[in-house]
Length: 110
Length: 276
Ligand code: SF4
Ligand code: SF4
Image (cartoon, rainbow over all chains, first blue to last red; front, side, top):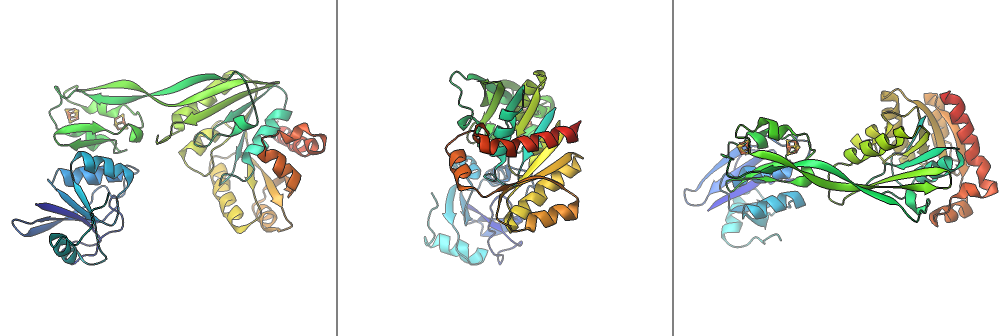
């Protein structure tokens, strides 16, 4: 399974970003290979519809689960279309969020 | 002649002024450009309004021709296109109808269809012609509607009063683009000052003639001091008046009442003098 998280800095020790569309980085983690990689959010300063671009980006990385504090209405439409499940993050670093998710401790958003 | 009435925030008396000035002026047009929250028609009660849709073009993708190169979605700076599960999706409400995606598609897979983003209502109220635009809920940009409103009003060759949208965004700029005079409306408070400063900067960037109306004055000189500092002309101060406030909130055109008429009439005279 592939998991994505919007992050403030670039790595598994980063904190989660408050804004999915305008996050600095995406951390994308593959549960089978146990490998994670950080990607710069190239659209973070876009004029509008940044959530659409962020959603498109992770969908095209074959992400199935997004862990985030919240998502906007526009992102939600795109994420639903890409069949991405959305879980609410906790105020801990990426690594802890992924572990909590795998332990079934995170709540599904929407 | 075009006179725009602006304020940094809604509810400061922008519509009160626009409605009453246009009502008193002869041979006038009132244009409600506050397309997200138009309320001029609450004052100008007209029975048989004409209604017309405002259409813009949005892209449709022919999936048989599309090869998924994503040139269009990379091109769209409004992020209205996204490549999801092998297909380009169009998010109509983000599209600004620039037509660019159709031009850049190498496969000629994009055509355009009409999309109604709102309506324009119009009618005659005594000797004032009234135009009002309304953006459909969820649509991103009211600019095409404002353009249509201004186009219609300029055809009439009358004195046009433009009730601008609040704030200082694209729609406000559009609404004052052809204005000969800008009336700024502000309330005397710190917030009022902040909002005034915002629209003042906008109007000066566009090098407009400007006058200021202070609404609901209480004796606090905060706005007067600002006006002095900027050399901004104060057209009038409307005192806090419970009765006026009540009548206005009930949708009455208060300048029909003799005791309020003079207040608005004086503004009109000063503005006309300044423009000519
Ligand atoms: S018409 Fe312009 S704004 Fe609309 S989708 Fe195409 S490129 Fe984007
Ligand atoms: S540019 Fe044309 S061919 Fe390429 S993805 Fe867009 S619609 Fe398809």
